[in-house]
Length: 120
Ligand SMILES: [Zn+2]
Image 1 (cartoon, rainbow, N blue to C red):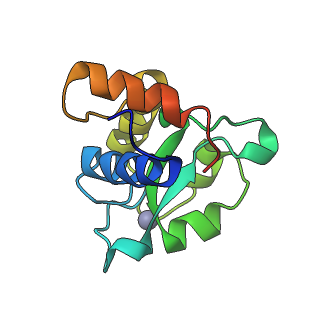
Image 2 (cartoon, rainbow, N blue to C red):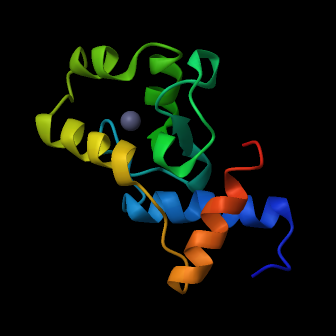
């Protein structure tokens, strides 16, 4: 695990986040058409002080990611046709205790720490 370089770790991390959400957009719930169309969204944009950490990152389809832009996620989300309270709760829970699983608990902790020190 510790022999990974940062781009490998980043790829594993992004895949693990998507897997935690069943490869679906956290906002509209749509599955991706292909891997590239599911992006990683900073719930609180970096421009607004949002951090590069697992808890602040969820999968979002290209449409949601682009449409949300740097708006405050909750006010943006509540205006969407696909808004649901269940999805809002799921996102809020992730913001509190979201973390990715990879191999052993030790690997997951290491990956999480590592990723929080590199930029996405
Ligand atoms: Zn979406």
